[in-house]
Length: 64
Image (spheres, rainbow, N blue to C red):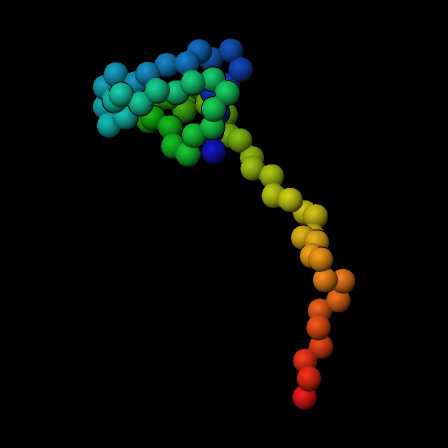
């Protein structure tokens, strides 16, 4: 994921394969236009490390 660096203004691409795409401050993007990489920073996505809690305290045992 990418986001505009601090101090970079929002912009719209006017030519090339990304023509018409708008990039705004504070938003995250999967892809960025070629030649504009210097305007963006990589955003690391955090994954939760907390185990998922369930209502059942112990899993049920299988009957034989």
